[in-house]
Length: 367
Ligand SMILES: Cc1cc2nc3c(=O)[nH]c(=O)nc-3n(C[C@H](O)[C@H](O)[C@H](O)COP(=O)(O)O)c2cc1C
Image 1 (cartoon, rainbow, N blue to C red):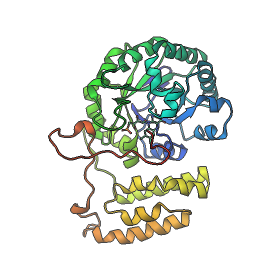
Image 2: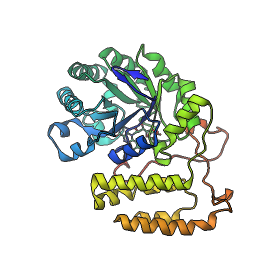
Image 3: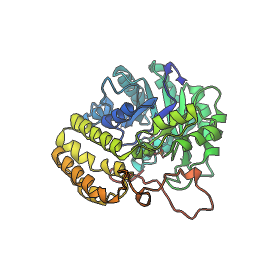
Image 4: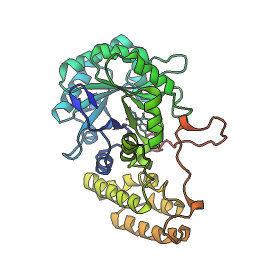
């Protein structure tokens, strides 16, 4: 897949998830394979210009962390331009503008979803960035403020005229937050609104089949996956395989999940040090365990982990405890297996099942 000067090996993208899509997680996803482009957490343009160490930590990268896009937010055109120049100089292959983040503080300063209501100002901001950097500038948005104001198609068209190289669209409105169903027809309208640039669909893709349905029903050129990659860092690889061969690979086995989880912690410790890395891993490990089957013994202890040795001990104890749920073949007995994941837009409307993809808590509760 191609946008601007950028040629990507896959049309599957890792969505920015503030607090999660840090260097260790991006490396994990890349090692597993199948992802075309990863994006950083959103970064405040002004903080970058002011050389705030926390902002620099958010754009920390390594040679294996490529190709990488940095997502910026802010509403002052000069600051966005200068921050774009900074991330270009540091090796980012594209820069993404956050236009669809429903966090109050972002909306308040005129960034995030508020941008969608001010087309002309936004187009001018984009033009300033596009003219300043050589790398492609992309934009990420929601469908609009609410169902009565589905502004994304108009915004996408205006942004294309201003030089935006690709559009990422989460198929929900700001009012929806993370509830309700992802609106594939809404994404399709954005695809139809632009002339030449790729539109990348996003929202609730938790299985390869969901990605395929999003491609088929929206005509999007790529699919971006956020929370689905937490459950299943293999989702990119499995989706590419499905798209290329028509074959659906099974979900990864427990032993592979444990291997990758361990690797994730190693990388967290490398990048953040043992104390902070372990503390941050308290909110990461329970995402892995969601597909382990019975896991409360693991979760209740891992949310207190402080050292790598302690993590190993928790894991060993858990593996021993989990044996009671296994059959003779060493796999989880059918009745203990976690329910299959189903995207909001693939649920049977008649179903009374109130299944829902969790939104991580912590510093991100405002999302
Ligand atoms: C914890 C969390 C943090 C997020 N952080 C960002 C962000 O920094 N920038 C952004 O554009 N979107 C952010 N999003 C939105 C996601 O990129 C994505 O659009 C949304 O989660 C829907 O995709 P998914 O269902 O595949 O997760 C965040 C979402 C969550 C749940």
